[in-house]
Length: 347
Ligand code: PHE
Image 1: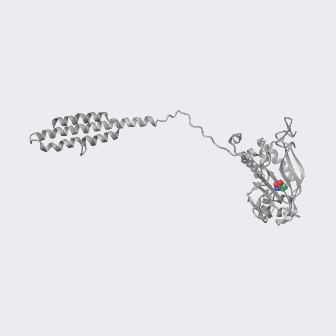
Image 2 (image 1 turned 90 degrees about the horizontal axis):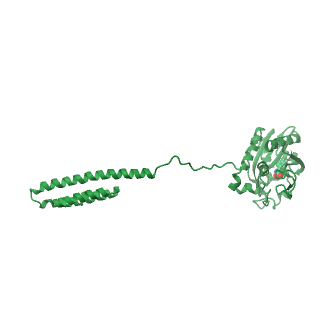
């Protein structure tokens, strides 16, 4: 029995010495000291000893137990320290390693130009308003003095929702003139940017969805001179003092007289040619049409309950994409809607 205890002592101490993990230690504790462990098994045989031997063996068993327990604590502490050390090494953070670069987005070039245009007009006292993209034909056409049968009402030009052609995707922001004059009485000064939709094939200067910015000013004694002055002032702020623009007579059913304003082509500088080829940006025109404008037709004022004998006004509708193209020197309208980051990152 003495020999058995001595074996347990030696084997237990050696195994504890070799243990490498907390779970291994726990296994060894159960093996040597547990209720069904080796030491308990020896102690169970104590009954068979003579009364003289019993206390001696008991004492020896206790000292073996104490030694194993002490060794167990020691091993536990050593392994704990090692595990902590390994964990610290694995989780170490090198604060001197350069961080990953965070790429920040920015406004889309269209929004940049829109923001600039809005800022300029707000500075001139205009109120910026928003309106529905799904519009009634009465606002988009009829009350703007565009009669039944007018070519712009054709199903080949306009997206209609209903068989009776009464609801549509607005083809222009001009219905906002009616909506604003319905709700406000002169003097009034409004700017209404938004999406418009036409059945156009996409090319370098056309898209079935594009943006317009509608402007409307109504007061006593408003003249074509006010219209021209306002538009020239705005364009010079956007394109620079030395930018070239021209006004051409035109016709719109809701303005009289009407005009269009062109901006000299930024690609060919008005020559219509690039390297001996027809300029693709202005199709050889040398000019890019930017907006339609005119004096609000008396019929339109009347349709909104405003007396054309007392009040007059001007209105304009400009193409935001066209403006952005000139401002940012973009040659193809489709790039604006492609959302290719290689393109967008240039702005
Ligand atoms: N709505 C016209 C267009 O889309 C532009 C315009 C607006 C013309 C206001 C005159 C007055 O072409």
